[in-house]
Image (cartoon, rainbow, N blue to C red; front, side, top):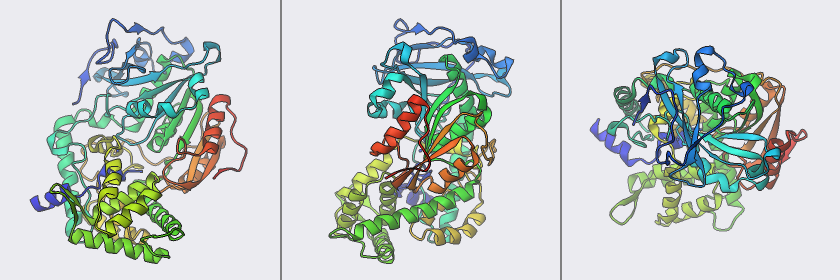
Length: 517
């Protein structure tokens, strides 16, 4: 087992990179300034309007009528931060409270022309929405900045919101996937997940049953009311689309303008979701290879078959004899696969082409850059598993034997990447908290029009999922981005930007069929 753990630490493909990413309990009911903010600088916001603050359950009234204290964020003083108190367990609100954190960037336009708040979630699960908004806000159009307060709530269990922290035995990135080249590899996956589950139960057991997507969706509704918004205006990306559809199912009459970019299909189970993603990575690889073949000095050959062979050969060679740069840097064949998957998501085809050419020539610099991009995604394994394992759509609970039996199908679907995606099949087999959310099609958003954005070459949330979600929602419109990479908004397409902003600003869905190239 020690040998397997050592191999696991050497492999750089984290569970967080494959998905699509200290516990503080408090009994306080009053909400004070966020940590790092000056309490003297904070001013209480006015109570939300009665309509906005209406509660779905009288037992939750004190949460919907608390006061928020906003103050400059310690990390980003141009933004404001706050914390709000929410019940640990919405079904039993007297069992204790936790705090969740939010940030906002105030609208720049005149108050008379503002649309309210636009809540944002960047995906994950396990990624800090606050950190991502801080990083991405400069790319938001001036018109959108003028109309909306940009708001991000860190999901419970993540970042600044009572994070799930499982200790030294399960630090961020501690769980690594292994290439499944022998039955013992599946046993190693299973053992690693068992170790993390035990550590999380020991360190965060009371919190684990209550960090599901439904819990965060309810937190979002509390925040909506406290912001004074009658409806939730929302931009969700990747996992954020699943959070958005969960909110719409719980609060259909409160859905405002909702953009779902890189849609997760909530009707699928975890096994099917992973298999679909494996197929999508293979298709994205072949699209990249076809483009590479049209360019000078392509290191992959002229056909998909030649590209597959070249990648397989490079992986086998470097697993046998890794590339080294100095005494501390070693790049294996499995690192190459991880770098390829990162570049297909980004997408970074030029960088990938250069990295593969460098690797064939014995150089590691370009590969290291791609691996660095992967490792700075901002998610943690602890939160990824804690949130994902409560959803039967986001996760699978296969035993080691069931995973071994499933491997041939994943390898057939994706000869180059099936092993890596299949490593998530046993991720929740030993998780101490059972799932609380099961596959369920969303068919109603209270009549509110919804904009679904799908990318034809998306390897993480396949385009078919966006089409399926749109078909089931009579008020939804699909905006297709005919391109590569995971998600479309803020990815360089002026057409996508214009369509999304027009909808958020004026409520106008694009005419069907809506396609951006």
